[in-house]
Amino acid sequence: QVQLVESGGGLVQPGGSLRLSCAASGSIISINAMGWYRQAPGQREFIAAITSGGSTNYADSVKGRFTISRDNAKNTVYLQIDSLKPEDTAVYYCNGEIATHPGLYLEIWGQGTLVTVSS
Image (tube, one colour):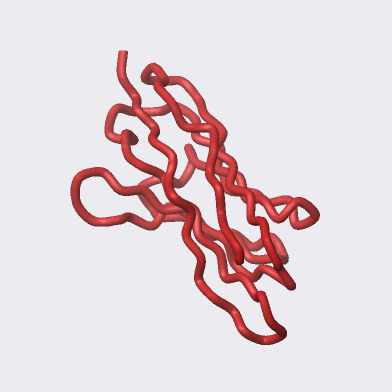
């Protein structure tokens, strides 16, 4: 069984920074793209994604403040968030395209980590 576990959320003041981590564990053969989403009351919103080769893609709303990266050796994806704003308050989720059998990729989601931006 494969799982993704996020960490690093918490309460931060406006203008501050956070680094979220998401580690995959279990019977993993390989991981393709990994990404981050967030959900305030309402729809889940795409933030960023990164391929196994390191190519990145960002939502326009977060470009310049959010940076996604990954450590393939640790099966971990990170999200650096700078210049936090109150509207960044949300539950942040990671996901990954993970193969547990050769050629069979499943989309796995983490349980989420809460980021609250408030003074």
